[in-house]
Image (cartoon, rainbow, N blue to C red):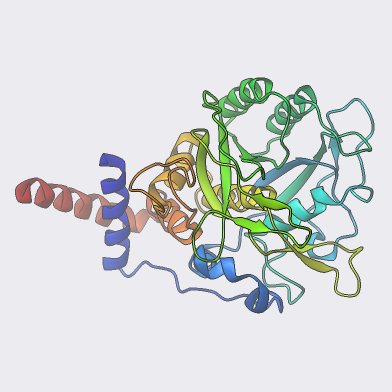
Length: 344
């Protein structure tokens, strides 16, 4: 409660000081027609502060990323592998490219769609050539990512045990990184608990409901949910880039695999604006600015709420203001706190 009050007061102060950024709409042709979730997460507000910094590394622990994906050009770092075999190129199983493009398609390059920001992408292979992972490979990948300087680490794979991942994510936290994990697509309650270092992300739809659908063959899919869920983000009808998809090189996909990188992108955006924030501060921003869905407070379907990247960006700016604004914020915050106490 105190932290939410603090964030609310900072946002009010920024508005009063005329320091709110002007929303920015990118020139990417598929952004408007297909990326409905950009408006829902207030991405234009975030882009008013920053289009994302290439100094911030997001590690994508997956099946490899296709290096010839045009909308990722210039920001793919040399790939690594956690499996003991060479890195995969992403062509046999394109899931890694889809995940990377969700968060990393270049913003405002006049091509295709827009990701969350223009971050650097570090592909780390954590599967074999059949697309299967092991908890040990993913845990090794998390540690490799942290050692390579990644501030944000995304795991859009289910695995047999999350204990090794949680331990590795604890190591990553000591290096200043956050680890995001897809909640799963079983459409069922999962009673997992106890993974304090992993940020599990469930998926929502256009109506800010838990993503759930019946496929043409009658198969029911939807976001898994339970006490382990920390946050939620859009995961229905998400635009992805894939140079093997003809003729456009883009497609639409569903799942928590794509909700997780959107939430991860919110953290990367916060660090793009305020690189000196700690991992705990960034996670606090994500929690405190999330849009509360379902029952009031944390719940098993949406966690602490659906990501609002615009609010995260404003909060990051408030926590790292220009020097000339610092005294104003400090004085105004003190006044608001005094006023709040008097009214109480």
